[in-house]
Image (cartoon, rainbow over all chains, first blue to last red; front, top):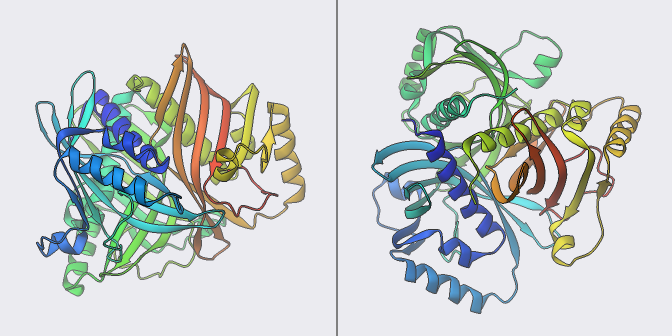
Length: 158
Length: 158
Length: 158
């Protein structure tokens, strides 16, 4: 399905902000892109295809996201690597009023301090977002990672 | 050259569908993005620069694409890896009425079952598409792979 | 912040041209995307975070870019590898009249002749551009590479 150009602009900008906030280590800004009632999950593709409930990270409201980021700030005094997300174009799948569902592919690279960059994970985001004239916010983000080897104690969100 | 925002939206959505259909292993949906009279080719950059006629995959009408997908379904009972395309923005090069020519870069990653993801191929698509108010469909897709080491018996399209 | 869809279209097209010109080895076309008064720099993320003045490449006007490309043409009779940029969506940060500031992530792959492709660098562009109704041109491009191991004698621009 298609979306009007201004909806694609708004939601592309939202996902660009999402990625830039994570890559700049502005995790608090990343949390602010979500609605108070939201759901953030990281699962693997195998999980989804086998209908297994196993998840690598799960926060089912915004306070859990806030807690997660705060505890990360206390544990990690030094940032040991940098993330870099490169996102593909949005593929819209459903629309109901201001509610839009779409998917997009991501590639995520990590760089050790002063070191080389390497591929960390690829997969797709399944997103449900509210986009009205003034603003857009995330209701549901499910990261479906193709990569099955992601450590279950993920330090930072994908 | 520039394209009006609604044309960029329509054709970006078409290429997002293209990539998502391949990555979800919905090859039949991928075929449906093409016009009945179409041309799909995979070549390497060296080929193009040396004007050699060698191609890794070539279907010069939609029935050949259908046959290719059908035979793939009979041979591959199990999917041995997952594909993930991350596409760059469209670069428009020509326009004649509803006909648009554009190029875009791709990165293609593969993931073994429950394994790590790795880079499989990078390159660009050279596309000719028809975009009218209601729909868009692919006339010509030439995959120009930078990677010269792609096996000539490509299992799935790029 | 958001930009009107036609501005996103114009500046996305500009960055798509930027990447395609480099990847097609049309460096002269790449130079033409810049304003006469421009600034092009390649730095590493570590540099930026530590406020060190160290840069890997720096041209502070268009003639320097022209010289750089011309001397590259004299030194490199044969192209030893191919570049491939895959760019993410634009994240707008500031606007003042026709002047737009935005950032976008890149992944850059290199392919040896007839060989395999590998990841060369990831990072982001910090861009200042002029976009009026007819055209867009680059005022400032700062490449902030996450990868710290880039040789300081960079052959081609990123």
